[in-house]
Image 1 (cartoon, one colour):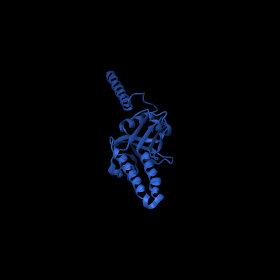
Image 2 (cartoon, rainbow, N blue to C red):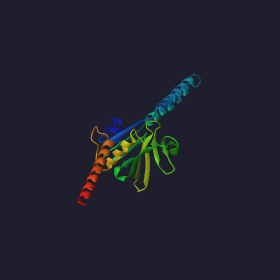
Image 3 (cartoon, rainbow, N blue to C red):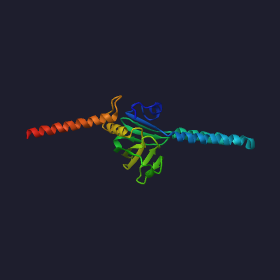
Length: 209
């Protein structure tokens, strides 16, 4: 996870003021599969040129661009957290969630059986998944209220689920992580400070007694 988003996130996902960002790439077999489909499309078009004439070019002219587009769109799951919202994007899909509408944030392992695989999936409890196979196998879970006040639930593949969950909690609290410092570490330090303060207060109370 990084607080320095790439050019795409900066341009299309409000990443200029990003507190945290994540980009998870599809595994190599996906690109191999799509490349194989593209190659078969070209071979089929060339093979039919002799008998079908220019009609043999149709698979290349129409199918090949579609294969390339699908490969580009669904090659990454991206997440950006700003001071105002979290933006999820898988292809052209994904919510933009205002931080004030978030009711729950956590990190967990992705249960592909519950969702029936990877991609844009839905579970029986209404949770929407934006997931890719491989990586750490962990996702960040976000519950939030939509425009009508109805609870929505999403899980998203990120490169550091615990760090992203911590980043969201910090953003909701109105704080940003210091450059070059891991957000999870900052949150842990805050918790340690609170524990120490509570212990000191307890010690003072015992001394008064």
